[in-house]
Amino acid sequence: GAAQSSKVADPARTGPSPSLAAWAAENDVSAESLAEAYGLGLPGNAMLAEPEKENAGRTPGLDVGKYVALDCEMVGVGEGGYESVLARVSLVDFHGRQVYDSFVRPREKVTDWRTAVSGIAPRKMRLAREFEDVQAEVAELLQDRILIGHDVKHDLDALQLTHSIKDIRDTSKFPGFRRYGNGKKPALRKLAEEILKVEIQQGAHSSVEDAKVTMALFRRHKPAFDVDNTNRFPAFAPGARSAAKKPKKKKK
Image 1 (cartoon, rainbow, N blue to C red):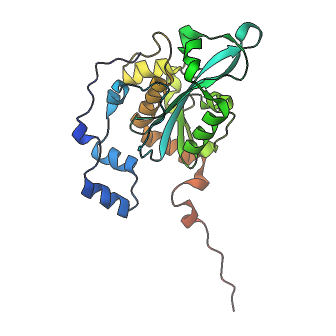
Image 2 (cartoon, rainbow, N blue to C red; image 1 turned 180 degrees about the horizontal axis):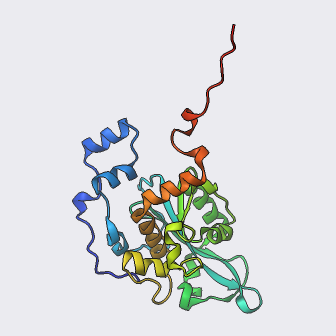
Image 3 (spheres, helix red, strand yellow; image 1 turned 45 degrees about the horizontal axis):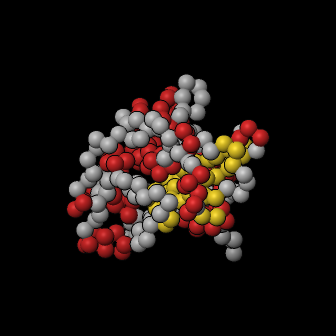
């Protein structure tokens, strides 16, 4: 798992003061932008030390905000267990707080639990939720939000969901991380080691941990992610509409 040496941030600094929060609300400033500007929330790798709540469903009373990171664990079905199906889904928010975690009951007979890698075992399925229920909850959480993921297409495919490409920030495709992949997509484990200086996936994977690492990577390089996204989708950049040419008035 992730290195546990990082200290959790002072609880007194995990959110803005009431007056600052009120000012932000009045001026349409997001909680994420406020946290960035004032260094609030769980900075750096501290978010990785927060304990996960396995199979807890949706975290009650949490103001999720604009950004969520998604990660899934798969098990094998079919002959030889080579085909992957969904077995666990996790989401965290911009601050690395667990938003959702659930085991998912496979709709086909599992032929390879991949426990050494996935961390999933038959006993975990006793309290697993049905695929359709998890899919609906995740779809609701993703709606109108920026999705952070690592090779996130595979996770969306497993959930049988789609998300607007302009609202995805994929750490496996980010140009600034290419040098860590030796010409291929960089592994999340490699990015965690090189950029965050933490070791993950030493044994069985945890989708909560992987989602936190993905969000931490995004946060570390958020300005560069924003620039890359603006370059790829200039029509959706802030102020793009106002910069568009106004229709000429007809001469009388």
